Image (cartoon, rainbow, N blue to C red; front, side, top):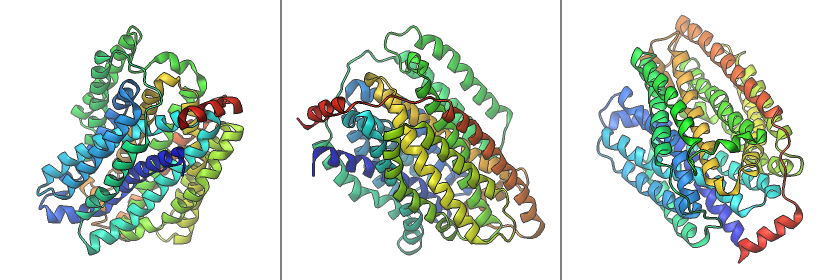
Length: 480
């Protein structure tokens, strides 16, 4: 097995672990509430702290990768993630579990921010689509494993092992990572401390305000936090234009393909991932399925996406990202539209077919869009741009969660919405019918967001891919 293959395996493994952790925890939350003698509104921060820290840090640690080595930061991230997982499993109280989930999220941020940049370092532009297709396989396989293992481990072994399962995998990955992944491009530059502080504070205020909105509703305080965070982006932009080596070089956004691809990623996360959250609430709250059985209905879509990811990635290598990514969003919109037709008695086969259509869409969008971002990023900013990509995607995931809970609480009490989300309660009679009206509204909101993403994807233009000669030169450089 050659060096590039080993590097790809380690990156895919990191992607898979992050995906496992994103789905496996949700299924275990009701059990954790009972085990740690806490309440629903406290334990929900096991999810929220992870999303918040990942949204805030990915841009910053991506920049660290540019300055000190993407491979180094990535491997340290794997180590931190593994240690955080072990500590989460051993947590004796809810407060410690939330804190250690924060540590785990720091490691995940280092992985996410630099994985795309490492692929860009080791693959020329006309081969990256295939590589990102493999990382897409890692994500989808991880999501499936999280769904299946979450139910099995929580039911038959114990919730602590949903975290312990990361430890042996992480140890192997850390060993291979430090041995095989080496830094290809390091550009030492001054660190933009004012930019880091302003951007970190802005994102923290926005994401915390959004997370609290999901928990207690849109209060004056939460609205103030979100507005204050948004306003801080103005001095941040002014500072970045004057700094010699800024955290975000706004000149890079003059590239239409890069800017459209980044914001398409943000809108796709905000729009489509909300459908998964809301669908789970429909299956658990209205149809009365357990979290495990509800999630199993989505497995066919994940499996198909895993199979098609590398194929769609190779297609984007040949023809560019615009057509595959745009078609992918169109398939997601079709899926969301099918979900707007859900009733109190919709056959489960309809939901499975819709998830398969969605799986086709995600398999086309992710590899193509990610390769478009990195193909148009300046080489010295690979880590920073990869970090921005993950920051926007993580913020979109948080917004998806906020949309799901907020829309659900328009027709049912907020505490009931949380219980439905976690599968500890289901709705009957007229209450279920009222909730279904909110579900339909949420899916239409998702379609609207996805429509904007589709337009951005369609107008991005066609990116340039490396020639065969450039590919050979890079391969020789890496193999040394």
